[in-house]
Amino acid sequence: MTVNRTKTVPFFNSTTVLDDMAWGAVWMYKATREPQYLGQAELFMKRHKQVRLLPLHL
Image 1 (tube, one colour):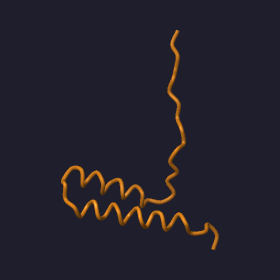
Image 2 (image 1 turned 120 degrees about the vertical axis):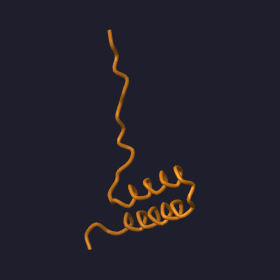
Image 3 (image 1 turned 180 degrees about the vertical axis):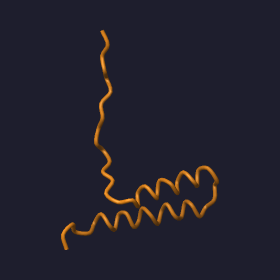
Image 4 (image 1 turned 60 degrees about the horizontal axis):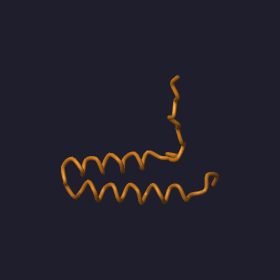
């Protein structure tokens, strides 16, 4: 008998492209160790957090 023990858990809700851009910059930093990529990742996440705080209906 086979038991499927995998579950999917919706723990991350991506609402803008900015978090994806931040992840891309983090991976670029990891690959190159160029500090500008880490700075870009931080800026993208800062903007992502600001956008998430805006009301949905203005």
